[in-house]
Length: 401
Ligand SMILES: Cc1cc2nc3c(=O)[nH]c(=O)nc-3n(C[C@H](O)[C@H](O)[C@H](O)COP(=O)(O)OP(=O)(O)OC[C@H]3O[C@@H](n4cnc5c(N)ncnc54)[C@H](O)[C@@H]3O)c2cc1C
Image (cartoon, rainbow, N blue to C red):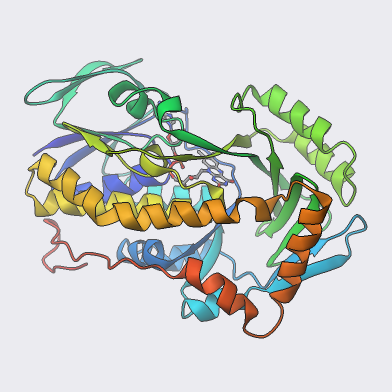
């Protein structure tokens, strides 16, 4: 049985571990954090990623923890609605196969599919990789040296596997000029169920989404050309307090929650563009390979798709990894490229940099409430033009599942 070391237990990592087991491989997952990471904002989940979750038997659980959002609402200093649109259009465009859920809930559910059957090592990471003719020798920070047939980097935007095997981060990262931050709070006073709230000033926005169990998520996106972030958690909170210091709406209450938050997600809004997603016995998936950024609104689904396709191609090639890695890239490159271009187009809509841009964005959002307008505007970006291949999994007797 071939062994595979997967670096990163976010979204792509647990997904590929699940499908590699189905293909008859022995995966091991190593995660740098001491436990599964929480935090992050909500993600919208549809299309091919949704289909894969269905094939993993996760739809009932996703439905339990998820949300059917009704409205996107932009508010002014006093919290009054100035623009917005009903989000039922997403349901219509996807035949009801559309759901919103917290990233941390998706990660937890994916992890639950493998936690009893896979070797998972927390609080450790790869510090050196050496590829030999018949295996990859891996040095783990705490776990010493081990050998694996293959190594998969699923370790996100700042992938260590990419750095060790392909080259420095700067060679592949394209910073889109924004920074994103998100955190979760309990017991926040104001709630608007199934509604995305957005408040903007030139170059910065804040968002709020009410979760089940009296939890609330807050999102910040601001223009910042410096490539130095993320920085330390203390720097990050200081930056947000400083930047939003003169914001109105609910900022004083949100600032109090920020001060108390024990986990803050904070990162550059960037894309990763690489000529090749594999080298020898080492391959990358998810954000590590092709981060599309939050502006594509689909990073988690794409991470799952890449995990599924890579595992499926390994199953199909019966262990001939070079053939599988090449087929994986050929199948997904055009599809991912289109998502990256779509995200770039959308970049300025999130946090327009000028008052005029903000006004213009609000006019467009207002127009979305006209019958059919949202359908027209969103339709192109939401359509998932990828036929999910039908692979044969070793642990199932039926194909195409
Ligand atoms: C805590 C968290 C919150 C997030 N919140 C948002 C959000 O609000 N909005 C948004 O657009 N995107 C967010 N993201 C990014 C989003 O999850 C990804 O774009 C998408 O889901 C792709 O998933 P991925 O599995 O490729 O990468 P990720 O979900 O980023 O997972 C990568 C995993 O690898 C681990 N890791 C990193 N380096 C190493 C290493 N050297 N060795 C071992 N493990 C390592 C990380 O701890 C993480 O668990 C968040 C990511 C994280 C980790």
